[in-house]
Length: 202
Image (cartoon, rainbow, N blue to C red; front, side, top):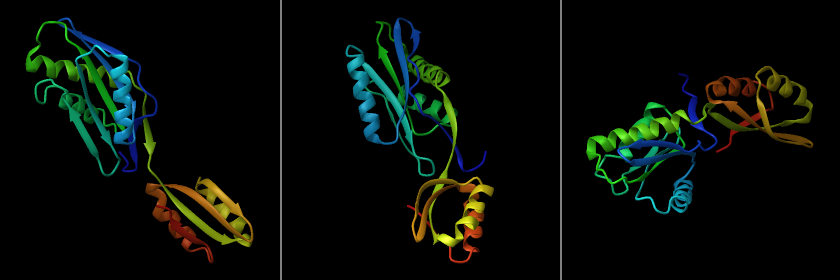
């Protein structure tokens, strides 16, 4: 796997349902980019399932620097959140929240049963999700004189570089997006082109 590729989802999954000894586990996957996104999605589910007893979840944020959390929400320690998080790791996805909403059916499942049920709920939810491979891109600002336009555009076309923004006056300013694995090579090409300034955008 190339180091500038990661997997995620862009749209919420459909609702999934797993049943075990009269308990029902409703599973959901959401794309998230922050703890605030996580909070909003949980609030939405708590309104939707106002009579459910447990909203167990796990999320992972980030691509290089990973942040994650697993929450048992009243179930025995490590019987819900971690099995859910284990499936996030198994499917190798990030920027994702998986929630399993449990309606207790009156029969206790025991810790082993709970681990198995939450793992299965998360697994079928991820299987019901559209998982995409995405490329990590780096943005740069190009500044150059108008008379270099043809040379710059030739490099852009030959290397399939995406132009995000452009301002063309006496000086031209382009914001470009380059795949992370290709960034060093393309940086060298532009650095070798006289009077073209290229700087990364944070």
